[in-house]
Image (cartoon, rainbow, N blue to C red; front, side, top):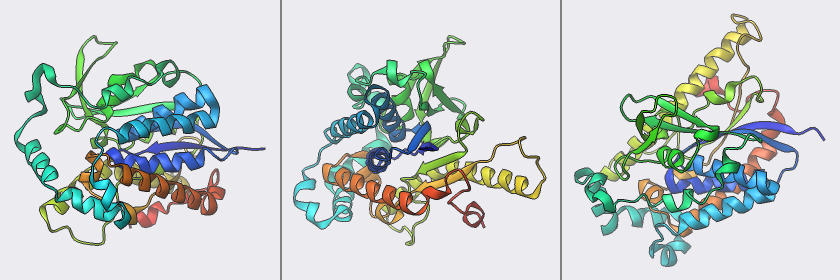
Length: 343
């Protein structure tokens, strides 16, 4: 059996990363699909770490089990009482209730006037207890899939890609560090001995695709996108406006990389660049913008069990659609029309 080889680009988006969990859960059921490398940011980095560690220790089922464990833990970080009585009305109703709840309003206001540094020695990132439980001998191991984690340097705004032994609890926390909620994560550079502060990787690479361009990796990149690229309705309320600003900023780095890929592929097609001088890159995308458009920052930052369950189910459906309609393009061409995307 000839396996189809893909690389994964896993976007960040807080608790909406449960959608990616669902996608991965379905893809891991395919024995003839091989994941060669993963580039993850924020929630995508946590998903990638869980997948790799589980894959090495227990194969495909081990990866699925590890992802299940991760999201059971995440669900408990911010469980909301809203999930019980609003669940029958769907994720849109839950999202709206969370957006306009007193708790959400106060929390949003507090992030504008209170720094996460006011807590002093009492501060603790709520994700630390989760990421410290990963087996980093496996996460950092040389066995496939290769794993890359993106974070943003606070002082110069440049992207940092962690790989191999550089990946530890702090690297994952750095990749998921929203600056209005969490203190910057300080990590010592082993080469310079200097400490560098990091924020969420989504500002500079969501996810970073360039680590996946190397010749020893397959040309196909499957991007699991959890921030809507388009919204039909114009945002008008303060919450809607802030939510759309968040989505645009976290998609901008991905769109820049996709535009660069489209430009290089066009030059290759025109013969302006000789084959072999630059890599062929085939882009595929798994997304559910209709569902994500019903959600907001509130459901990203406060894990809600009902929303997480719905996102997982939606991710599995989207993965099934990819396997039905686009999998035959792998190794041959992109299933995303990049030229049309930027026309």
